[in-house]
Image (cartoon, rainbow, N blue to C red; front, side, top):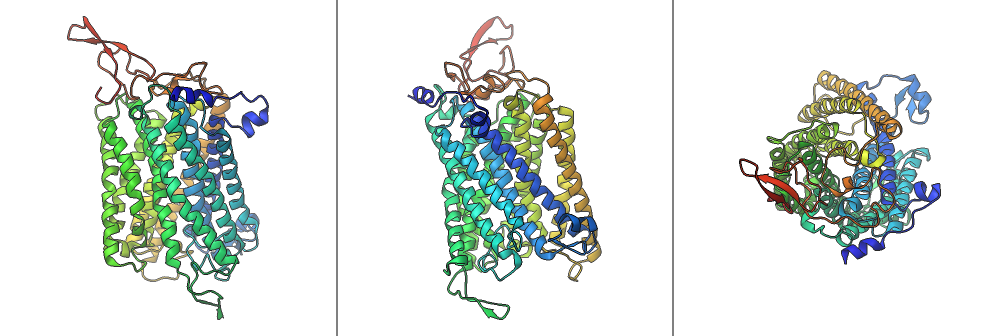
Length: 607
């Protein structure tokens, strides 16, 4: 029945340019559309971070060229404080949702899921196309907030009331905040459509022989991630609608009685903490909505380029499921300083520390896979190993913030900025790059330039540590995050803070330069790169058995049949060091003299 259902989603190949490349219902084109749009948004977010670091590194210094570039946001060659807060808000929103979530889920889940399970397309191709165009609309709406009076939203990417619920609180609380809420509502609609599609496709359209126990870890990660999105995004959608009602229809879901500039605000009875609960009920699963696909991608890349079976396949799957479950009951660790009952804080501390266990298991399994392996240090492999490094570094600092007595001291300092960027931002971005370098040949039928790719990796890897490692020291000194300037405060050494900020800013610009190298490599390779064969990495998963790039419908008249798990690498006695999933059996030499022969049928991790 699975084989029959897979055949039913195959439809006629589009002929015109518009239906093939623009309003396409082909999952591969939609995945590439998501990926390119996410990178475009990421570039905008990176430029915003440059402006922030320019201010923090050289606070008060005049830059006349900046005034010509942004006349409404700069006064006397110096960035306005209210625009700096807007930069913080939009930068965080773009990087978390519009780059990492959209790139990993919208981009690679779309491209890989049907190929890796042996299907011709997604279960709902039209809904898939619609999800991308709603996502693109949400991007346009968010960027349009820079053009409205008062500028973009300025309440922080967490959008806490009453700054976000009362228009009079600051310039960015006007039209810009309304646009932010509309953009996020559109993004959530897009993500929900995508999640439904991924879940249905994985459960119903697997080809013959593709049991759940033979799924690549990437597909397992996309499945659990989609379930997380389906349950965690709707509460934020409801919260965004409620906040819009507070702002424009006089309700008081989140707005208490307050006075702004000696003027009473016509709201009372609202509870700002309710927004925090609703936001972080998404916000912490969102961390794993980003990290779980990254973990699946890294598992695939490490096993392939280490030429070794992934260590502990079943426990890796169980860890993914455990992380997905636990991610729903840890959101309160973001609210230790909100006045919650200490016993409740203790409960959230316990779940926060427990969720580190399956994450640690995955880390040990990656290291065990690498141990004694025949590692190929391709660019994709370097970024996968870089992910493990930054994930461990960021995860260790998370142990500090998971304990209320320590978190109360470090909360809202640069220690939080460093932790968050290392464990989620940098790690997820490394996995995204690993995925691009690994699956680029399948996407475009060409190879990316390895020399340029390795230069991109080393500049990014060293630069990331140069940017975020010193921020931990700033946090220990008590330097608060989101502040426009620090020269008015005497409770920390001014010279040290200034020097560290200059160092971080310079490192930020170097990392930014490295990303421009990636853009050049990506664009040039897509058109002029060396032609790739069907399976340049000698990998086992089904997508590498299709042409590069795969045609519409992915496969010929017959769908592939799966006979084994996806990690049969370096099987003793096999003629080659890989056995694709669609190969029934392979003669294997056994015994010391090699005269006796058997067959490699490897259909589970025991092999």
